[in-house]
Image (cartoon, rainbow, N blue to C red; front, side, top):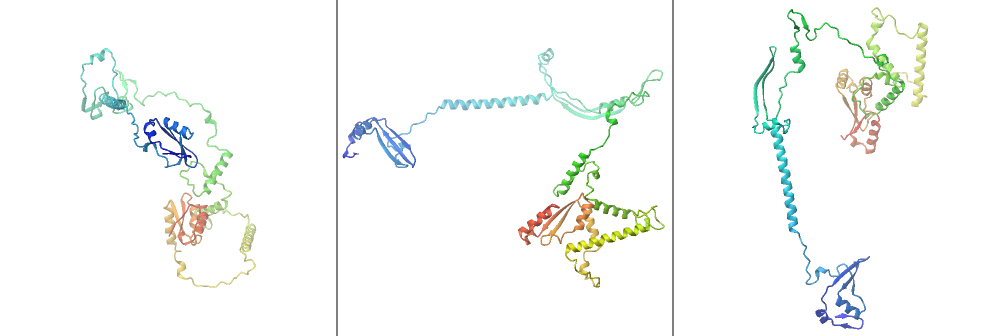
Length: 430
């Protein structure tokens, strides 16, 4: 039944007799998911045009409401045509190509193994034609020896040469053979030497020095700009705790060091070395070995003035220290109270323990200093750091901040940042 505005029309007979095709069904999807579909068939289009005035049947439906053309009763999907001979020919051609490549590689490998890495050229000359019917053979030899002037050069040599190969038995060097041959001079019938042996000629060879301007120039000189550049680079690397010197250069490092910063340390070091090398008994008294004592004063009055100046300087430094500490108004307690020291305070202060400590430091290349995160500055040994910095600068010191789980994370992070400016620092749980 075809329904319209004025009623319905039975088109059953029309569908059986007039509808013969071909029919098309097209859909165009728009925004909102609505499909505008059109069904077209010549006889049906004429009927719709005559009854309704439309060119074809139009449908507006959403996804799933319209019927797909494969669901129409009696519809058969068209079969794709497969070119079977072409596919079979391509497969057969690829197989033949792979077989040919395998055969060529096998032939070349067999040929190179048969002839070896070094072989004669296969030219078409007469000698090659004579060797056409020749059957190749391998040569095996053993117990080969070689003597020269009664001295054995080679002994118990064995090996094998394949067809087309050239083998050479390498023995002593050419210089060694010439030395054995030239060991004696060549004489004539009268016994006079006609050809001198090696290193026995009395003729002085002609020799001269090659002229070069470098013989008259300076050697091992450096400019002040280069020295300043080296000083700056060394200062940056030395201040960086995470840079390590792996190999020292053959340079006078005393020229590169900045003596202005380490003047006090150098002075202490020289004084220490002087005391160690020149004792009091060797400097003063009847067994003195030094002719003149190194004193900065010319007479006794100048020496007394130097002592007074040193005392004044000491007092000024004490007053300055009091001002900085905030205890300048307090009076000094000059009374000393004698107290007994508990034995517990003497533990760990014996010379034997310190000797063992410095023995470990001297035999180590990397020293790990363990600090307690609850009191890092109290567990830090400054004397060991000073010893490593002044006496053993080639040794490496590492800080390990232990028991960081007992303090807040921010506190541990700040301590690691503080110590990382001086030495490589690692945080560790207890």
